[in-house]
Every structure is written in C-alpha cells, then in structure tokens.
Amino acid sequence: MFRSKAEKKVLEAGYEPSRLPPGQYLTDKWPVLHAGSVATYPADLAGWDFRVWGEVESPIALTWAQLNELPTVEVTQDIHCVTRWSRFDVTFAGVPWSAIRELVGQRPSARFAIAHAEAGFTANVPAEALEQEGALLATHADGEPLTAEHGRPLRLVVPGRYFWKSAKWLRGIELRGDDQPGFWERLGYHNDADPFAEQRYAF
Ligand SMILES: Nc1nc2c(c(=O)[nH]1)N[C@H]1C(S)=C(S)[C@@H](COP(=O)(O)O)O[C@H]1N2
Ligand SMILES: [Mo]
Image (cartoon, rainbow, N blue to C red; front, side, top):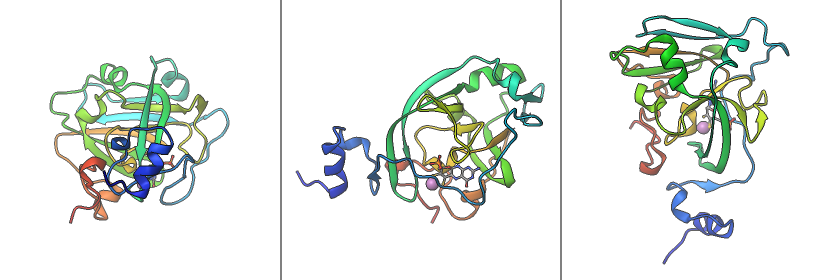
C-alpha cells in the first residue's frame, strides 16, 4: 500500500496512520500559534472572570476561584492545526461544559456557541460541539497548568475540528439561536472545520 512520507512517520512513531488527517504531518513538539500577542495576567488572576451569556436563564461571571470549584474531567486527544501540524495524545484537564450548562440554565434555543477570547478573538461552533466527549474548558495540558503561550488560564478544547476552534485566553461563551462566524471564519476559513474532511477553507 502506498504511504506518504507523513504517514510513514506516524507508523514509525507507533501510531495507526488513519489517525493523521489528510494533508497533515505529525509533530512531537507543541507549536504555538495565534494572531496577536500572548495575554498576560497577574499571578492571582485578580480581575479575571469567565462569562456566559445569551440564550441562558441566568448569565454568569465566574471568578478564577469560582471556576476552580466546579467538577473537572481529563481527556486525551489529537490536535490538528490548519497550518498542517498535528500533535497526538495531548491530555487536557478542566471543566466540562455540562457543569456550566447547569449553572446558567442553557435554553433549548441555544443552538450555537461563540467562544470569546482576549483581544476580540472569537470562534464559533454548534452548541452541541461543547457537549461532545472530549470537549472542555481546559486549565491544564499534559498535567501542568496551561502556559501563557498555550492560553493560561483557560482555553476551550473542541475535539474533531481544526484547532483554531479551541480559543486560548478564553473569557466567555455566548450562546445564540443563530450562527455567527468567528475570527478565522470571517477570514475565509471553513465554518465546520472537520480535519478528516479537510474543511480548511470556505471556498
Ligand atoms: N485567542 C486565540 N486563540 C486561538 C488562536 C488565536 O489566534 N487566538 N489561534 C488558534 C489556532 S489557529 C491554533 S492552531 C491554536 C494553537 O494553540 P497552541 O498555540 O496551544 O498550539 O490556538 C487557537 N486558539
Ligand atoms: Mo491553527
């Protein structure tokens, strides 16, 4: 069977080649990628909050201490950047959406979720993407608190989509009845962003 150079590398690293989406290559480093600059906060995260609003019964603003009282989960997943690098088996830990959903009373009309991050970065997903196995508001990666470059203190992790949907320096989730393209989506990237269907661009 013909295998590309990228697939051979996956095999040599001991993984099933089908885990690598088309047009991607495996890296064992964790590249840092974002538009704009890294957000920085005081050590105690004073003044930081995480807000949820829109199609909910009770909008909330959680402090860092309040967020850390919520239940946590740990998931391991593969991440795929649209610039073609993939990294396998990244372990994320943090708060599952289900914990937030109960706090705010998410309405059935909440069909879409917009992640709002520092400096106006946004990313849109169907609200059900937050319910998937492996989706979470991550505070940790590979057993350590997130570093500033990777989104300290909180990032979204959305499995099954290119990693731009996983907003770093997450400050809120807006639930809406209608969809609204996010930062990269407005610049021509695909709304759904399934790496296995190679949904990179909208055109
Ligand atoms: N706030 C914010 N989050 C972001 C981005 C960004 O520009 N700003 N870029 C996205 C893209 S394109 C990728 S590939 C991942 C990269 O995450 P990493 O730097 O932890 O690898 O962050 C995503 N989240
Ligand atoms: Mo990316």
